[in-house]
Length: 203
Image (cartoon, rainbow, N blue to C red):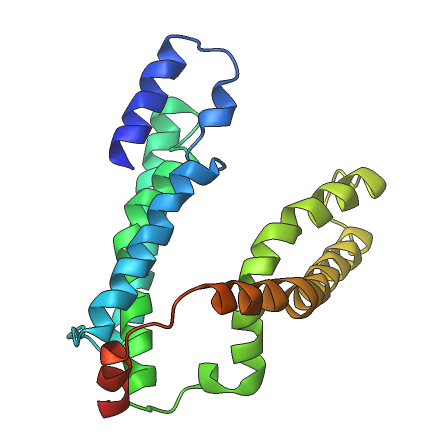
């Protein structure tokens, strides 16, 4: 992922046509790296690895890191008038994201109380990937239909509607497409090994 960014910067200096197609922020091939990291983290936890921080500590560290990264970006923006690319900011924050996800998963495995264990939050989590897919489409359509140039009460109403519609659409996509496809794929794959499941059961 770091090498991808290096190549992107070099290509930008060479003025390569269609450069935006290689952006780390939008290119799914680049985003595959984050997916692989998530798979590796889940596999490590199935084999018994656990983080040493609590969720509250991890959240504080992540919040401090976010503020520090925002300050760094503001400093760079003063020097360059553009700031760091969004994909670079994502990559710099990725270790803190991994830490927070691991600590939250460990808390779940130990059965600790959390508002995020409530059914509504679990459901929203299940819908999150579908939300990731549809929200940009909904926002693009809304901006074209309601071209507000400034922040007004009308634009606030539209923004609220966009959020509500995006969440509802992601729920529909999850239940009527993603989940059926997942069941179909699982029916075609060999049964997983049970060693990892026993690790979870012990916790």
